[in-house]
Length: 122
Image (cartoon, rainbow, N blue to C red):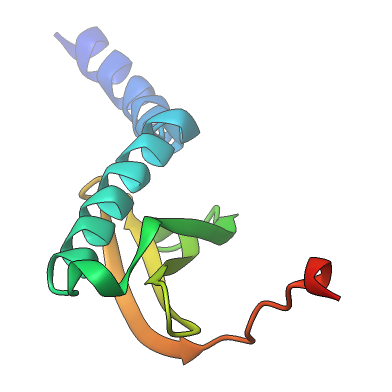
């Protein structure tokens, strides 16, 4: 019985370290983000008149970072483009709460963008 207690005491720190190092693969986390982004894009265009939408609304991941320490293991900044006549975008920031395995949107802001210049018309 004493031998088993010593073995357990010896193994606990290693088990704890192993579990702490265990993290979801980036591929899985990226897929989760893509699902959230698709849902957000659908929610954005849902409330916009059909004639005001781009032919194909889209989003662009502007930055994606990983962190080794803290509550959040990843962060993404994403721009959503959906208006056809307004030079506007929505920038949203997301962070990945590793404890729960969920992406959290914590920033949402509209920005005016520079108009596109058609150089072929000159």
